[in-house]
Image 1 (cartoon, rainbow, N blue to C red):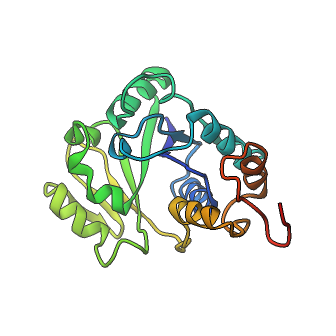
Image 2 (cartoon, rainbow, N blue to C red):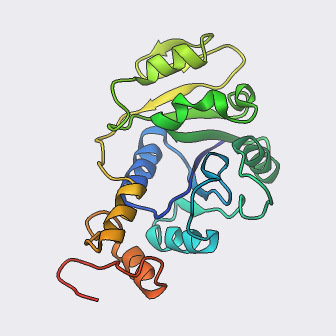
Length: 222
């Protein structure tokens, strides 16, 4: 059975933190492939202005070039309407068949709001969850969120929770990377350098496509 990682988000833009999470998941869970899945129309951000889907896809592909276990998927761009995770999981199951074992990677902040997701109670019948502890999420822990949102789950060992008949929940251990897409967008609006936060090829893409006209690298005026 192949171990398949699914890492969704807006990726607006992709940054070093996203890549570090993906590499840690590949290493710690022994994944065969990690799919990066940009949301076409994220339901929790319907009131926000988001960079067009095809640009976010292109930046992701540039960011992971040369890393064969990363695959960028346009599966949510192929559907109309909100990008619900339950629908994406159904499509991946249909595409990859019963031999795929799914691991859905999610930040602690999003996991804490999991009860607001469409058919959230069905998600753990279809995939294991791999939760990233984000330093900006205060003092809440993965264990606290599991206890509140999935009370039937019990801790099997450090960083792993299970429930009979369902998939597991894992806590992903890694050094925190203090960067977020909103931080990058704020820097871009102020005309500050961002090459310490995102791959150079992504900075170049932002500049060439004038997605953020103020985008620049350290030591280079535009």
